[in-house]
Image (tube, rainbow, N blue to C red; front, side, top):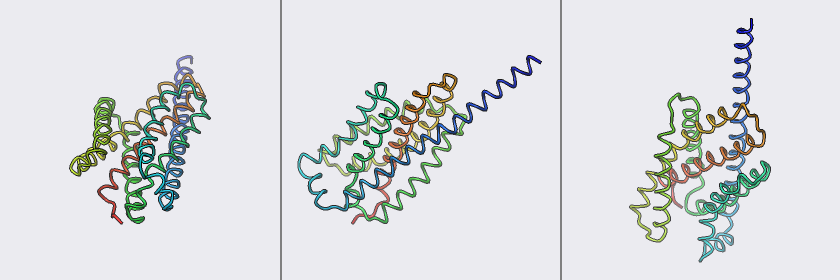
Length: 238
């Protein structure tokens, strides 16, 4: 009887973890989706305002607009332990809006239809890759370390190419970028799932809330970067 009770208790714990995991992933995807909505709303508003585009993307100001999201990401990583869950969520939404301003130029460079089509293709690809990362039994950890090294490489190459302006380097960065962020989408999804399972027994609500926001940020960045790199290939220029 005691053995049966132990088995039943174990099954109940697993069921609770599974239910909590579903709620956690819904929180991650919901927060990420709200961030994407803010990003594209801000991008559309600024990209269709000629005066704002002239102000933001002329002279030294354009470098502030370009690098502000990267600075905010590093700041977020450094501050996350000192922020409350509500503060972290607010920071994420502010970052999403700033990212929208940073990529608003796409509405000047590319046609609206090609932007919409690329967004749809990105959404379909992202969903498939994230589903793979969630369901696969394969450990994607080793692949993740390689992808993060590649990510650092393309960030450095992208910054250098801002000043060089090489079309060949730009093309190579776009190709590699698509591959890296496709892989990171699967890797990050699996990591979010595994992190929750590893910490679920502690039931630290503050940690879980901030973990969901960090997960949303990682998947958000995967989506945005995958979209931007795909737009280089699929976007029709004005």
